[in-house]
Image (cartoon, rainbow, N blue to C red; front, side, top):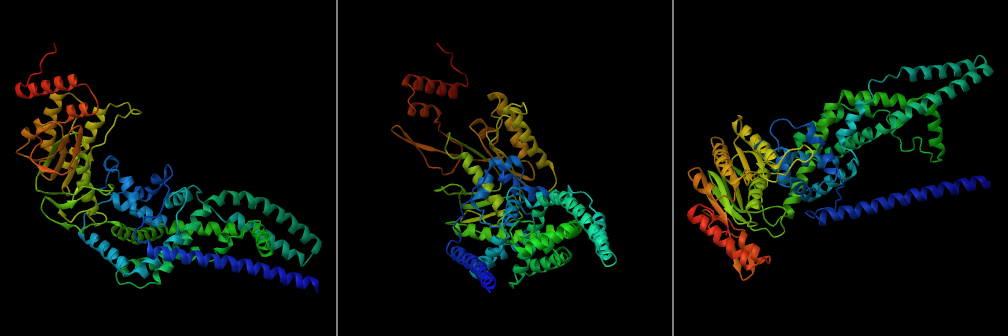
Length: 561
């Protein structure tokens, strides 16, 4: 009787612990849901460890066909930081697809309008949005590797056969059959075969265990697909139909998967049921057999898995775009034109806390001059980022924006390639050559951005070469935005490029920048004045000013005394 009471007490304790876990989970889920309602547009705190963004890029690397934002342009525009600023995702599928979207400007307005419908639906239906975000939070991230890394790792297993496992299972069944004829002999045979099966089991188990993470994410993906389909939406009907078709093809993957995917498998939990199941697994190799079957199913349906990741990722990426919009003080939906032009009012940079807004309307290439630190480079990046945003997240940081569909490319924040042994000048001309090549290619118009053309060489050759390069860049199917300190270029190219500039104001020993773009070429210089503000002697400043003034008048440098 005491044993029964003890057993009942232990069972009651286990049930209480399980109930506590369930209540705790439900409570934390409720808090998370409330947070999703209240903090839509508040960026979740994220830690990006070294190498994390490279991992996030792997979906893009697997799907980068056609035109995409290349590495130089991506780095010029600080796009890693831009991505972080709008990463409101909770799953690896959404995170990797959002990164892909930013690197793959769309050339079809119909696709952008589809994205807009999803963004609008999610933003205007908070209950659906929160339900989706909860599903994505359960799908979760993948840790140290990309989804596609895990899928690629499965190829490392090569071709696998269940013949040895079927043979081990057959021998075990034969030994059990022998027991009905000769019990002692059957028991001995059963014991020997069990020892052999156990030894061979752990060898194979250690091989496959690292790959089960891949299956775990696929299971969570299938569960996310199932949960998403419970929500009816005309806007997402096409996506849901596709998900249903792909997930249905994976029924063979799911059947009997508990043999392999059970959380208690070989966990040493002490649970009698888990111990019994582990004993059966070791003797009969059932989980090893199931692993090979599941591996075969994954390989047969890899395109379906890819399509599910893409579709699920796309939906969450659009949820993230909606959250990003909510975080902005001002934005607009772009309008696309068949003409080669950019028209924008109140345009600003996404990474600045208090950005100065600028407007520009142009059908020609643009040459920008101005003082150091006056805002030239930031303006170039502002135009470039908004043109990318228009064709990716269908959102521009401006009061209004219209322009062509562009292939966007830049040469701005270059540096010496120390490891490759190339000077700054060599790096620069390679970067410029890739722009020239793109301009010559067939396709959509090119929108290119160049900051300080050929700064890595002497003045005379720089101006001569820059003139010809910028002339050729602006020819035909291209708009070029270039910033320069060489005022000579504004005269040499004034029939091709529109001139704009940034200026500054001095008050005593202080310098103030307006960061507002102004029509026409720059008329002032501040480099020598800045020396004075920083404490250089008056003698140095006055003589330098006189030398510069004399050169501008005569075109000849005055010899030193």
